Image 1 (tube, helix red, strand yellow):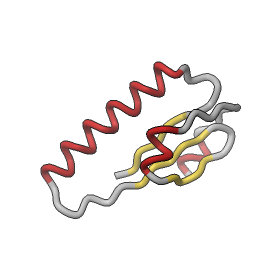
Image 2: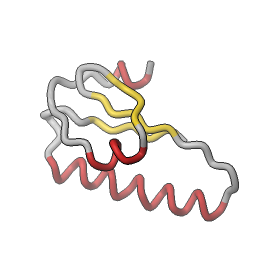
Image 3: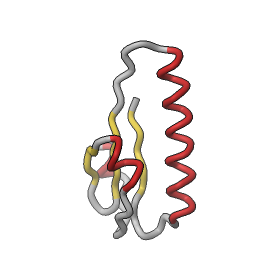
Image 4: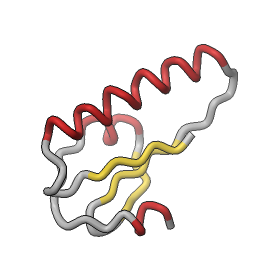
Length: 72
């Protein structure tokens, strides 16, 4: 499973929280239904980076947006 989130300045804290909440519940359901689910977390603003789960759920970065970097 790949979770991606825009952490740029164009995403308000409320929008980021919606993404985090949805990712949490989707993840909880998938793990309850399937064994060995592998997860990757990607955050992006002008550049994307793979992060750990803790960083994904708690980062408060901002900056420009360039989602193509996340897809790469």
